[in-house]
Image (cartoon, rainbow over all chains, first blue to last red; front, side, top):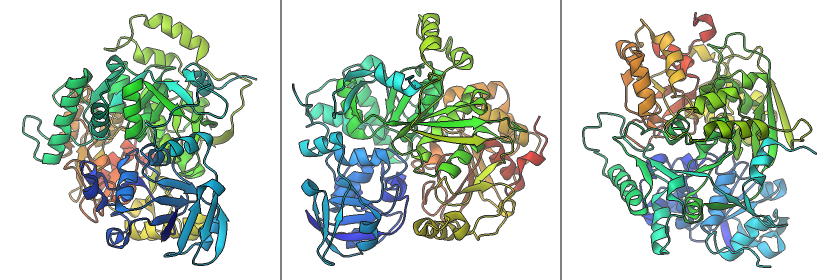
Length: 163
Length: 471
């Protein structure tokens, strides 16, 4: 999966800046997407392209349980978030609805990848290639459950192994 | 080896658990509100599914309800639609709803315990991160997203990864428990462990500093577990818990039998081992005030605001975060907290809008007036809290002091209804999140206890409530 990076070099990007509370009444996902990241970066909507990835620091998605957060990012075109760590509800919401991939990275990847870099994520190898800089980093493998929900295409398509 | 309280509740709710698989966990109570449920009900309809256990599902409207006169129509059309949608969904699927005119309406995490719906040893979920509040009763209470809400509606179960266990031991006794409150304890904990300190864990709060607390205070502690990154927070039930829940509207009929079994089973064994531990001694802790844009950016009321270097301990992103926070908050390092003037005061939210919060803050307000530059409001956590407070005459105390006395709801905690800060306004708030724009675009939030908020309202700036006579 290839895409370009939008980098927010900070920790604790919370769901209130990803999609401010006033928009939780919006049910049209395309409209919701126009307000994604509005609390942090008013230019986000004009610069994000289909297939982009967001790169950020620790505890991405902390705060509210609003599933509107991964939905707004997903409908903006974002396919994956690469972060040093994630808040758990955001992480789970991202995969439950198959909105986007939450990918945990290490400090090398965080430091090495810059705004605009073209990245190729290979989940099967747990590998992230920086095409722009010709570097390769490891991603933290998904846990069993998360891997299975992602492979199934979301929580409602997941079926436990029958044996 | 012994087991922790969390492990006991978890194990007693496993429907299916296999090696290297998620566990399917049974859910005893599902609380529903208007904001995170509409898509879940749509999903049920699309797939021709029913609600599996409408009798275990309870709904109310809290996030975007107006807190002004409820005999008037709701002016915000999108809110009105969301409220109407919940009414229709509850009717269609046979779910008990405490609607906007119900005497039981209120913030979902305030009404659950008040009605005896929250029970020790149970699993409780709600599409709201502050579901952790119910952990104060020894329940495993998890905030979930809308897909999971739909899954629970359809099946009364959830696929979950087993969290790790985290003991937060609170030792010692507060010198002045009226001035140094449960809010100050939990803010101190988060300041120390950080906003991601509890990630992937269920916290069990233990120790004398916790057992000393009333149920209202314990709810404040568990409520903010999510602000420390935890999946949930819980406190072992004791006599205070059992007495609180007796004779509530929905308390089970066989209550005393249940209490006997809870006394026996709902505690962490003495030889149980936690995955992680943090100890806080509260003998000398001070009232806390947040200065930044996450709850970990907090200091003592008698301290100056730290510099980004002091705050970050060499961590580059932490330093950058502190710099950005100071800029957003329009504050400078070195400024004493007591020198910060405020524009607004909000006493409310699932963190601090229960009866005891209103009683304690009214003691500061009694016979005083809100400072002329301050707009202050009290939003009781539920209509029942409001009624109880009014029976005690607390409404009069606040109104006489020029506070607004409102109807129950989430209100200015998250800025979904008309109660919001204007850009640049600075608020002393008893809520749980000081994120950028949380209380309104450009608004600046300082998290404090109810007594600290009340004292700030009267004085127009923060004051150290330990200097006041609160007994």
